Image (tube, one colour):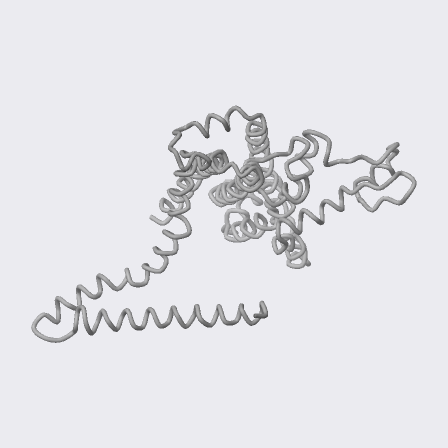
Length: 333
């Protein structure tokens, strides 16, 4: 079947299935389980209204259970057994083997390095872009250009930036922008940038910062526009300069939005995989946890250590998710 036709059929079946489910489930609820007739009509109506929300939640609960809860428990189970020994329970042995591998600690170190740099840089550039684009006539065009990388997949972005870091022999023209600039500034030989330890990790981070800056800019721009004009005008009357207005008036008022943007990008960083996989595949000391997990699961076929590394990623992500949910509930009160 042609992929386009398959997509259309999937949408048609999915939409009609949802409509049919909600129609017939409510019909059974109102006509069979709690019929609106007889001496108990009032009680039946109240019971039906109590059950009705769960009819709408049931598909989502089933989907979350199948695609979220089940994989978590299955991954936990796999991390505690040895598949090669017929599924024998080995406790924390897989975690012990993982902690003994230098590649795991390299991946963990690199993840923390990404966490320190990428969320802060993307949020800062996004805030700067939001402030500057709101002050120019063609700000909407500038915002569209800055936001455009968000429409590119991580793999696509990795391929684009790999061309930026590309190397050619010294005797031919460089197609890699970075090497062309390096040689124009007096460099003697083009550099294989992605093989230079530590520095190559920063070059990979640039890709994610480039992608996430647009997201941060759009959210923070909306927050900046929500600041009451009266506070800015009062600051100007009191003699405050542009920097004082920005850092002492505007930033404190959108602090909660900045934190939300920062934590959202942090979650993306903890799960980063595509960029590293497409550009270095974890070589030259650029390994990260998600790529390490992929190598163990699908290359080494070591499901125990691979599942253990997946649980480590989940443990790192969970506190941030919980904190985000608690903050969201606090703001709704």
